[in-house]
Image (cartoon, rainbow over all chains, first blue to last red):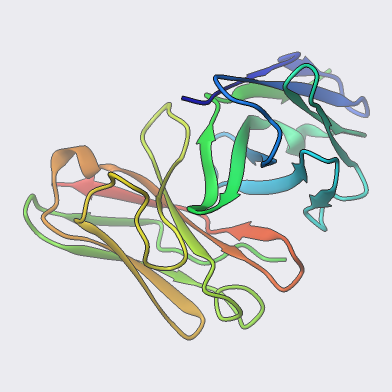
Length: 118
Length: 110
């Protein structure tokens, strides 16, 4: 059974770059899309973007100028970089597998909280 | 792109049925039959419960069903049980080749 685990700094300073890694176990990143979704405390979900294992990416238009998602098939990892962060980027960040049957984001990792603060 | 519109909260008694609406536009909900619903219990990651408007992932309860009319999708939960108490989010693929979610609905089982 595929399991995902997000990791990275829990605290990032304003204007710096947030970097997270999602490690996939129990399966391969190859053959699938992998996505990042975030949830500000007490708020709803926001789709950040996804990447196909070949490296093709699609981003949320509202974040595309700051987001980079990459994949490392040798390490079975997917990474997220979000530049020029502000307090509005404080959120629980989830990585998840996206597939078309069933079409959606599942499974996902437990999430990792990133706080943007000086 | 704007978030899809969901009621902030709904409630029902055990055994009853409830419906959660998800209102979008011709550019998202109304554009494709790619509407998803997620269930999120407190402190847990979201779980896919409905995809392609009205399909259930393998093994998921038949008490959950989805539908769509025009730019509005709906999730119906029948035979409410205590464990259904959670937050529910709709999501839709958009004409911008991206995904958008609703603001979430908190379900309380009385």
